[in-house]
Length: 369
Ligand SMILES: C[S@@+](CC[C@H](N)C(=O)[O-])C[C@H]1O[C@@H](n2cnc3c(N)ncnc32)[C@H](O)[C@@H]1O
Image 1 (cartoon, rainbow, N blue to C red):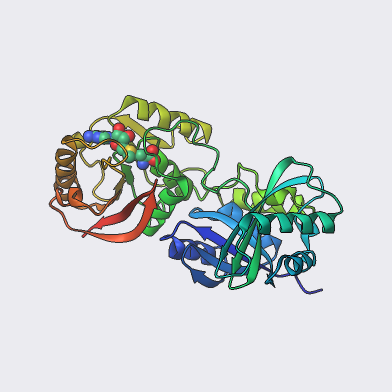
Image 2: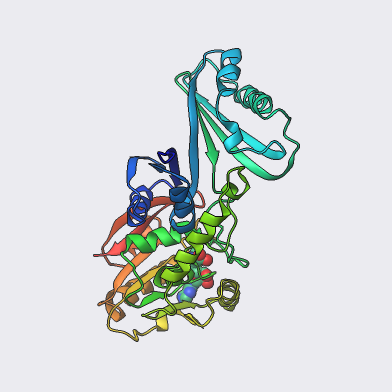
């Protein structure tokens, strides 16, 4: 029997497509297309579960259920009713339908969603009862064609489950992991985050260094599908555990001058069982001296827009320039911040590895030349 092939779409934060495609390739999955905000691939449930379990920089993974042409609502209803909803939605499950429309005769997105709900009820024989869990369904009407996608991830993939405590302006886990991968971090050389906040870079670095699957502790939407294969999921978890290293091979150091940030990072490390793996300390980055001849230093300093503009930021970036350029001159140095005047205050030259948006602000992952 031929293996069933589905079309999948990995949603990424714009800017992280290449990094995520490289992650897919490392899993042995060949991307079939890359567009802004995502990557397409084909495969069976094995590839889908594997991608959800292992992708560090992805936001969520969708299954393309089908695409139907429609210029009026009766035709839309008829054609949506022919899609295999029963593969993904149980009659008692609640679902949420999100619709968008561009360049199409059908442009009332609320009505498009309603018609889809009616089609699902007809196929499954019942109304959604509004019982948890919630299955997300995405409809994208473009040029009079409606593309239907089913979410396989559930909660956004940045929710690894460890960030219980956060400090001001944290970086999403998926973005932090993507930045580390973009810097070529593989856990084989020391890592230092000198402004660690809630510890995101350090924790993601530890997960990479230990080869620990980022999704191993969480639930996914596909676990509630009628054709969920718990045996396959268990097999992937066992394989993931076999790949995991018992300890890191190079130190991971995390520093912050705010004791509340250190307490938050400590708590998050405990939640994920990594306390003792990351060396946390409270102090000013200005006072740091390298304990190793080389490594990767990465940080996400305050940059004003979110943490409140103040004059001391200029002097902070000036000091960053000294630490990156003199004290740690032999280290690979990366910073996540806007490409603004502030970064010029460092007196160093940086080039962008990635450009993306963090909390609505345009930022870049900059590497010291
Ligand atoms: C934007 S936050 C970092 C957020 C972090 N990436 C996360 O995901 O939670 C910037 C951090 O820099 C710290 N910081 C500011 N000045 C510092 C200094 N001179 N030395 C060390 N840490 C400093 C702040 O306490 C804050 O936690």
